[in-house]
Every structure is written in C-alpha cells, then in structure tokens.
Image 1 (cartoon, rainbow, N blue to C red):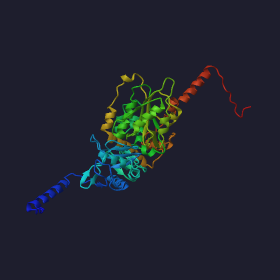
Image 2: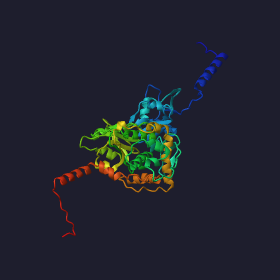
Image 3: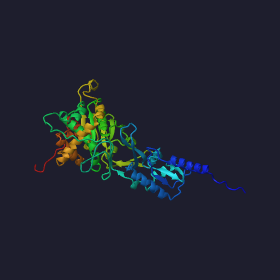
Image 4: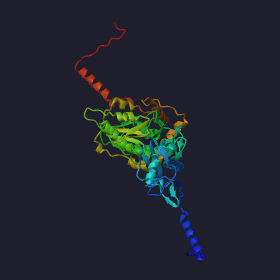
Length: 473
C-alpha cells in the first residue's frame, strides 16, 4: 500500500494561495451593498425549504420591513425605486391584489440574497411568490395611508416633507416645496387678476364663464392637494362644462394632473353603459398611482342625460372596491382621488348635479377661431410646478394660521365645502360655489323636464290645480 505523500512547502503555499484567492473573490468590492443573507432555501433548481417554512418567510419579511423600500398600499405591495426618467423616486408594484407582478424576484434581489452552504443565489421566483402572497406579510409591512408626488398636509394641516412619515403613514416623493402665502386680494379686481402670479399665468388663457368658475377651478386644485383630508367625508365631483367643444376642458384637467402628479394624467372615455364605465375606471386605477379620475367627453343621446351610479357612488366612497374583469377579485384603495367629468351643454342626473362643482367655460363665436392667449398651460405647469404648488400650499398655511375659518356656502359634501371654501375665502375668493344653484338648475335634467311639462300645461291652457289655503273661506 502506497504511503501518503508528505506535503511540501510548495504544496502548503499553494493551499494558502488558493484559500486567499477564494477569500479575495468573496471580499466585497467598492460599492457592494453587503445585503442580508437569507438561509433555509435550497439552491436552484429545487424549490425546497431546508428550515421551517414560516421561519424563512418571517426572516425575509423582517428584511423587507426594515429596508424602508417595501410598503403595503391598499391591498397592494409596493417597492420604492428610482424613476427610469431620472426624476427622483417612485413606487412600482410587487403585488397588485393577490397577483405577484413579473420581475418581483428581481426587485427583491436588491434587498437580500440567499445562501445554501457555500452557494449564494438571488431569491428564486417560486420563493418570491410564496413570500409576497403569504398571510404573514401584509400586517408586518409599514402601511401607506397617503402617497403623493406633491406636498401633503397631515391631519393637523402641517406640511409633511419629502420621504416617509411613519406616524400618519404619508409617503411623499418629490422635491421640497416652500409655501408662499398670498398677498391681500383686491375685491374690485376680477378673480383671474386676484390669482397669485403663477396661478394667474397658468389659468389666464381659459375662457371661464364667471368669477365663480375661476374660484371653482382653483378649488379643484386645492381639493387635489388636500384629497387625503376628504377620504371619509367625501368631496365634490368637478363638472367641467363648455357651451361648445374645443374650449379646453380636457386641457384644464391635464393641467391639474400635471400640477398634482408632475405627469400628464391618463383619462377614460365616458360610456353610457355603467358596467362598461366601471370596467374602465377599474382598469385605470389598477396599478395606477395618479391622483385623479378623469371621465372625458361625457355625452348622451339626444334628449338623454349623463347618469352614472358608478361615478355617483364611488366618487364619495371612503374606499374604492372595484371588481377586476373576469376574476373573483377586487382592487381596493383609499379614495384620495380627484373626480372630474368633462362635457358640453350636458344635463346630468339629480344626484350628480347635487354632488357636482361646476366649472364652466364659455365663448361666443367659433371655438376654432379663438387663439389661446398666454403660454401653453401644460408646459407651463411642468416648468413651474414647484412655484404653483407653493402658491396653493401658501393658501392652506395662511388659512391654518388664521384659525381655519369655514366657508360660508353649503354643499352636499359639507365638510369639504367648509374647508376648501374657508381657504378660498381667506385668500380673497368669496365666489366659491356662488354659481352652484344656477348651474345645478341648468345641469339637472329632472328640473328641466318639470319646467318643460309646466310650459306645456300653460300653453295648452290647463289643466290646473287650484290650491286653497287654510285661512281662506
């Protein structure tokens, strides 16, 4: 039997060198993140737990919760990442409802790595699905109650800085905004002329029918800014009406979206079939983080009215719960959205009329012959977004310092009207909702029909009903 070879000095040096090279290969390079290592999984391709399943899942959940990048939002799980356009941070979905999104395991690989003995590997796809659909996950993640790409005022109307505010559950992505309190307004000037500089430049080209419509347009921006305050109480539905097409109703809502989110909003076309409209709203909101629901170009057949139980019910519901087409599953999220319909000389149902906030545009003459004065409003909103947000936030700050006086005019959503009306009144825009009764009469199809019936009765000479009062003989 051959004797074992005695290692030489060269062998010993070779062993040491090999060990040193292996250690060097495992040494983190400059910029390496030193990610936490998760054990208890078998290296691919076998989907096997080598430790108790829940122990492994809870270990991974601890990493996610401590990362500051993974949150629960509604029924979804979202991940904070850098926007592809270089515009700062944004959220992307790891899970929408119960559906794990493609590439979720790649996102998780930015948070932890897995180890099986000497083998290190990224989170396998099968484990990402098990983790993200686990009953253990949702309640252990930080929960976003309000997410925005703009300044957010908390329950005490204090402006929250960019980043995560754990107490109120507010996550703000976007630059710091400095509130600019408004100058005292001259009541003898028109509403447009009373606007702060950048808001005046932004809205000055629109042909508003009256000063009340200017104030209501301003209230639309303030409602979007403060939407998190009206989740439970409800808020008005903005009805943008023109006396003819081509006056810029959709453009005005695009401006609102650009101010609130820094991006052109997606819109949905109106459908008279309410089930179809509900599907479109669901498709818009599923996986979307924009701040408004724009139902564009609402039309009705001749003699018909705009009536949508879907909009009427969901616009004031504290939580939106919409069934996903073809699945026994719903999406759910807080209703911190701005709801807007655009239309032309359109009549609406009594319910929409009572919830509505009229913003009317009017022009006598051919709309296509009208030159839009001033800068392109969408481009201006993009370029001067911080200044515009600063002017809006300044109105809120000034109102808060004044003791939060409530607005004088009533609305079906009375808490919303009290807050927004108070802010506008303090800023010198007392015309808020001054056109509500007039517009409701014009919009309300039921009143229109009653007026038509009365006219027919009068013209035809009766029949009439004679009413006797109690004090008459």
